Length: 316
Image 1 (tube, rainbow, N blue to C red):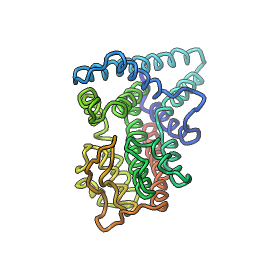
Image 2: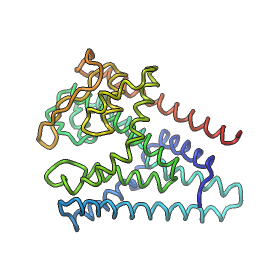
Image 3: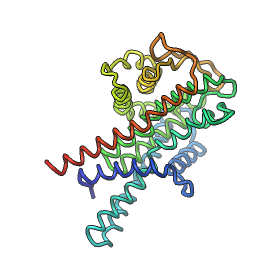
């Protein structure tokens, strides 16, 4: 039970549009919460700070999420058969797109970062976005962290899910989201997760290797920076093999320096700066607004690329 190439392009396009128009469906329990609950269940009952046990956690989560997503995929095909053609195909594509849209998070990401410049307590708003300690951050540091989060999660929450949706359909985007959630919950270099979360973190690095670089290139080209590879020398200095690339591209676009020393779980972590060395390190509301202005351009570019690919599918 596979989609044709044109069908999956339509599903991806609709999923992006649904996310843009509606964002999170607040009355429905988000799929990521289900994934998180399964990770917590395994951790509560089978935790040991061992690489092997962490690998078993990853296998358990991926099997659970993958089988559930595939079952949904098959069920949608089965249910659509009750409708006469072409209504059956419309029902199948639309229902799949709605499910896929719940695993794309551009609207939520944009609105969450926007809160930083709309609230009197950016430290509290930021705490919902990042894992670093936020209570003692200055306003500038909050803005910087929010911009970094937008750049990194543009890859994790938009480009990567879309990438795996196009390659492997609904099971593909669901498995990617499971990998990403595993990393966000256990992929930390702390005493508790150093070994237990290592397998999940490495798998997330592998899954995001291509999408992170696609994201950085898109960000550079959208700002007409034709030497689009400029992000790479600085981006590879980041501890993560992926996060530094979109962060550097964003820093170059908004003419500011991102990165720098950061406190995680009470411990200072030395980090390099990303961006033009002559650019300011003091981030303002204007920098956040400039960052968020990428939303419309990214969405429009994705709509155009998907529509162009769809047109070529029908004409060739």
